[in-house]
Length: 251
Image (cartoon, rainbow, N blue to C red; front, side):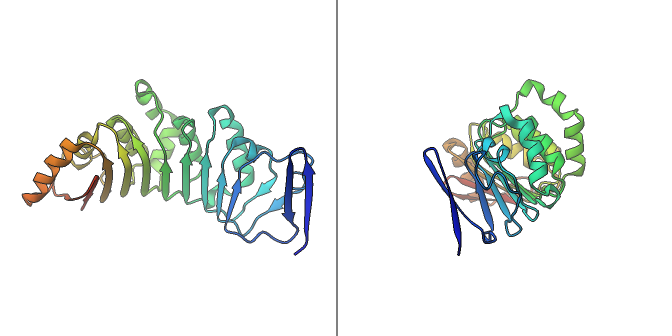
């Protein structure tokens, strides 16, 4: 395999002139203007998963991923959100993306909604947190972009790293109205409220939900739930199981 290299200030960047064959492509650093990779259009046909770890890495690249089906955004700042979305549209065939992972603590959920409106065929959404001003929820839910996503969404699976308030999960389910499977890795002080909300017979917030996983440190609620399980009762027709700090409800 023939290789070339570019020697810049404090860095050496190696690249191969042979076609890229890996399934995942990480964009981690800003590409120098004089770099070979910056000055040539590069089509990575083999790549299925694009992982962007900084805004600068995408904004400075000239890569195209026509067959990518999974997109991960990490450590993305709100300061570059508009430019980032514009570059995504140029770099990735967004209609092919079926899984979106947003693992950034600084990314505005308003921009998440805007991004979802551009990716119509997402089946799985993974996010770290829902950053939203609760006083603005009604205004956001009445916005054109929110209504468009809510009516057209194909999202069936949602994975959330952390939930702090029940209003956050209610907002998410209003947005992703077709959710069937939801996993919450850590629920902070609102586990009981979320279980009541999503399993209530008189509230149709999640009509398609069939499986819910919640990780929690609420020992008091876990104890009460364990009593319900031992009694053989269901929670409004939901089966329930406990494994240490993990609650699993299913139909």
